[in-house]
Length: 94
Image (tube, rainbow, N blue to C red; front, side, top):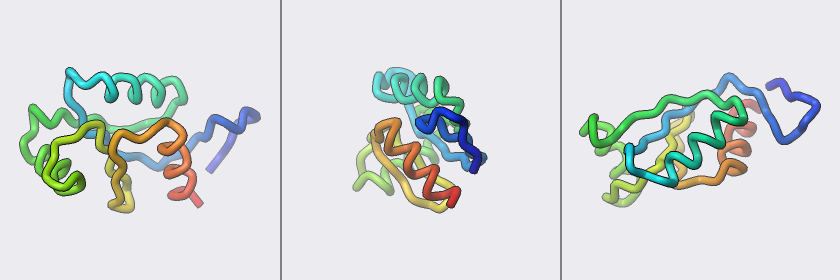
């Protein structure tokens, strides 16, 4: 993991998938924050990919709650803050 002089910005090669919908305000907010921080991720629209909706339901007790993030280690977060995402990525990189 490399860090810049601004310790709030962590550059990492770890990626995750964000399950989202086009109409989700929380998804748009988190995407904007992640983009601003230079964090890379894949976005999957659960309305366009029914198999993705199944994944979201599995980690959210049968609910299609978005944004749901699934990380390379198989863990998931539902509607996390930017700080929670950064902390998770830092733990994966260590």
